[in-house]
Image (cartoon, rainbow, N blue to C red; front, side, top):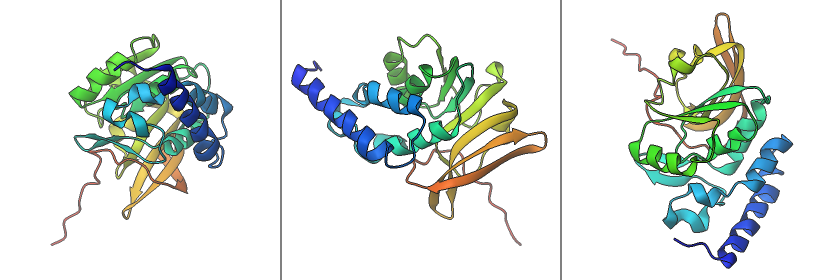
Length: 222
């Protein structure tokens, strides 16, 4: 689909409106994150049918039980990650590549994990120019142990259970940001890996796309 100058102007206006109304009003305070989200064309990471609503304040359904996270949730998670320029980041839930592209301009290296083949193909196309992003097709719960250890773990979605397999790929003292599903409510959380495991604490109740495969193991009672 060819993008006209009118389309570009409309998308630019929507992008600036997103920054003003969805980011600056919700404690997305890392100016590098704000600048990246103001610069990066979100529509380029959105299926054609959804491009007119690429900047809406909500998730974008991609099918297969997946969605692009809403801008505020992604922006808050990246802000609370306290990113440093030399960081190596493990991103879980790459989807179409938008968050990986945001990170690529802030940190040294990004390993982005996605399990849906259709989304991997879309992300590979969208991220073709990002030389510091490695896209890995693997189960989201597995991460990419071959690239460990990482300075930061970013889970761009909400999970019930944070697998030890992912935490163990983060350096001791490394940062973790994720969405959490608690009693049917999604929250944003941050914390660190410790010698004994990890600790994360919710910092905001917020809509956040729920990632598949992270359900907490059920305890059976007899």
